Image 1 (cartoon, rainbow, N blue to C red):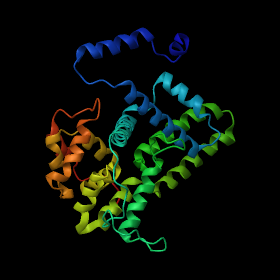
Image 2: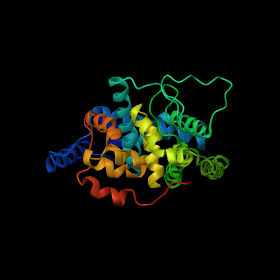
Image 3: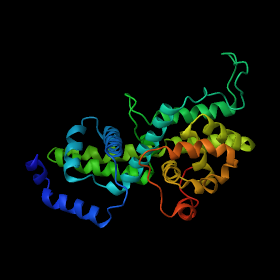
Image 4: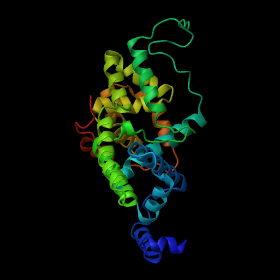
Length: 307
């Protein structure tokens, strides 16, 4: 193990001392739990494998991941907030599922006890938009149900940067084969074009937000009542014109007192927020932003999601 770490150019002793120095410099700072670390690493690994598959299905993603894990992931700062937001959202959803039994998901506007629509009944526009949002959310899991980042949800710049990092790694393997090396450039172009035409959970949330119209507060309130946090995050992201992961991180790190202003565009009353506040308060090792609501004006400035 020591040899493999040393061969990557990292001095194990220096790395440990830097880690200890960081801790001693801020011993009271919140640290990642083992669960948070494992979830975030797993999400990053699945993302790297998914993007690599779009470039070249012949890439040995296990080897790629091992080398990057030893030497450090390129663009780690770009990926950190994405993976952490997805990991925290997963912990939150998992905790909610364990501690409560949300009511069954009903089409918007239906009340418990109402007669179920016939199978042949066509979906309303709201139901269709909500179903599209659920499908977009389901794409954020792998085949075994582990949390993942859907490639379609990535910002174009983040996707291209990761794609180019993987292409550079692959080029070092096939550089002696001029034909295969030349194919990499074309593969990058095709993958970038394909990604530009895809829509993810932010776009699905924006469509759902728009179709709800005057019933937005009811839709958001229903999402809270059934602990449907992805729908709530997507609606809030659309209301603030922000990326889904930005909104998830803002909501998950918000002080309780900041939640009403953070979700003000959804026109929720204080009573509707109570289950949300209680659920967030129960999340173990939750990182709470020190500056509270003061940061949200800048964090949620009009932004970057494609409507």
